[in-house]
Image (cartoon, rainbow, N blue to C red; front, side):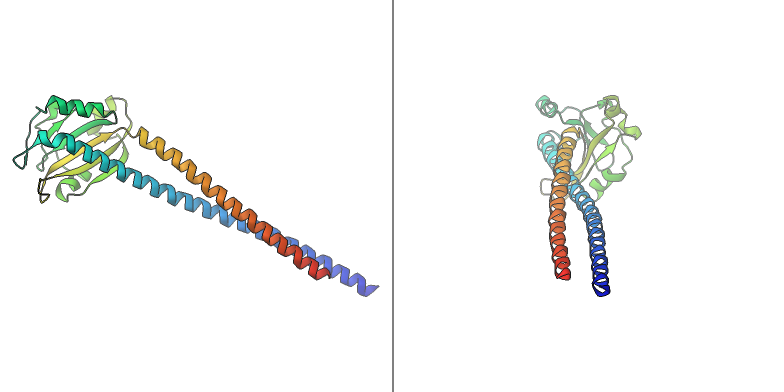
Length: 233
């Protein structure tokens, strides 16, 4: 009788330990999967956002250059003139995403802009992404808050942030930089697209990892039940 009682006590203790280990494993695996899901979703959404901005700035730069080059580049030089053909100005107006377009000479003179045109022909200090575009021939673009003094015109239109693109204007042979475009575009369409894709990424990752955890939990629970049954036998 004592032997049977001792065996029953040991069996009960072993079963309790098995259940405790199962709960600890399920909780630990849930925490690990949750953290992994957050990290993975964050990386994917950041990559998606960066790529979307790169694609948008390339599209804007190509569009603006295609529209304005014939009216601004003459004899391999960037001409300072406010007399852009009306058809080109109308073409820019038809693209509702475009807010402001500035064309800069390498010496910091504003060659042309579609807003506050009294600035055309004035010289400004080149810095930041604009200087990089002119001096290094590199394109930069990002969504930024309009906090600088030079953004007064755009703030007056009711915008608090815009997609800013700075891209060099190359010569016809592509060997030299004639100047740079500074493009301000409304990011609402891009932001709506990114928001919907972020939700899709987070929902997909959460669903996949939840299904994985549920399958893992069932597998471990089945294995634990088998071990307990074998222990009792």
